[in-house]
Length: 153
Image (cartoon, rainbow, N blue to C red; front, side, top):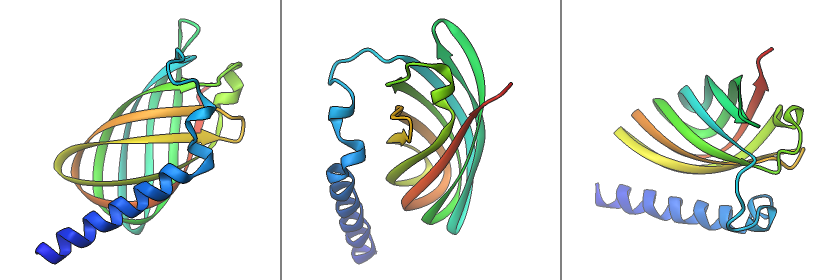
């Protein structure tokens, strides 16, 4: 058990180091104390055995109005099932339609009954989302994720 715990810790630290050096998540994409352009709330579920599937919905609050959106995606090096509720800040959103797109994220985490995680997502329009989630279920992930966010019409 101790060896497994140390291995998991080493993998998590390695992935966090790689994530910290990733130029796409560089803090220079948003000013350190910049106010977000929008906020969002997400409710999603995931199931994975090696490759995972993510689905859900949320609300984007932009310029004082709420906009519904759908979330779907895949992850690799992921095992388990979980439900997550997340809140986030959205940066570099100059027009609403730039929110739609495929976001990339590198994340690590362990959920046993309940826990939390943080992630930074970025799409090809330069929109950056900083998420903090509360998770429930059983899940181990050391994954790269592609997540599609699309506003509902």
